[in-house]
Length: 129
Image (cartoon, rainbow, N blue to C red):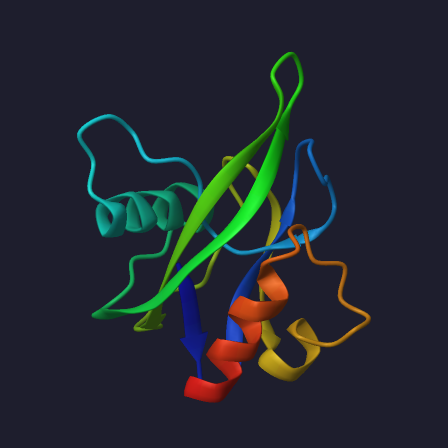
C-alpha cells in the first residue's frame, strides 16, 4: 500500500533479510482466504499502525523474492494508492523505521530500493500525485 501525504509517501526501512536496511513500501504476503486489498491494509496496519482511506489500484508488478532454504521464486506485487488521513507511522513488525519521504527523493537514482519493480511503482505514484 502506497500512502501519500501531500507530495510525500510513507516509506519503510527493512528490518530483516532479504534486503535489510533497504527502502521499502508497506506490504507482504496474502494470507489464505484474504483479498488483495484486505492484505494490503492489514500489512499497512501491522507495519506502521496506520489505516488508510479509500484506495485506488496502481497495478501489479513482477519481481522475485529470496527465502533461505527455498531460493528465488517469482512474485506478483499488487499496489494500491491511498491518502493519509491521520496519525503518525511507527515502525513495527518487519519495518526498522517508517517515515514520510518526498516522492522525488524516494524515486531518485540514489534511493536504495529493496526491489527492482519499485522504481516503476514510484514513477506511477509520482505521475498520479
